[in-house]
Image 1: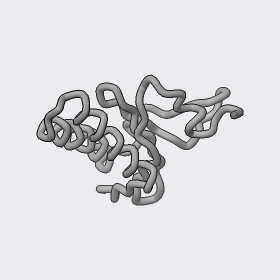
Image 2: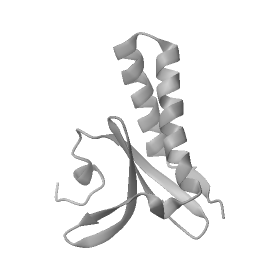
Image 3: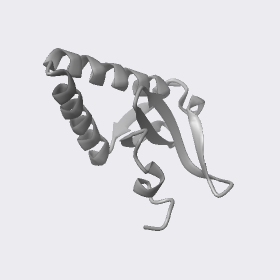
Length: 105
């Protein structure tokens, strides 16, 4: 069974932010586009085996999220009956647990 991949608006904004960061660092549109394409390809692989991602635990309990790492970024997603919901794509250096609201602010 192939699942449908659904990106949240926050994940789309994250992709735009990543594209801008890569473009700024490389000064090359092609490099930025290739990076985003590779990142999305890595995420899209999960539509075939969504639970093959790493489960995200907090305080000894499963949060409902899985994640996949691509270079300096982590894509966090949830799995429903036939959909993979990509909620956020964040830097590995960020306080992603706080962003995902698993820690007090």
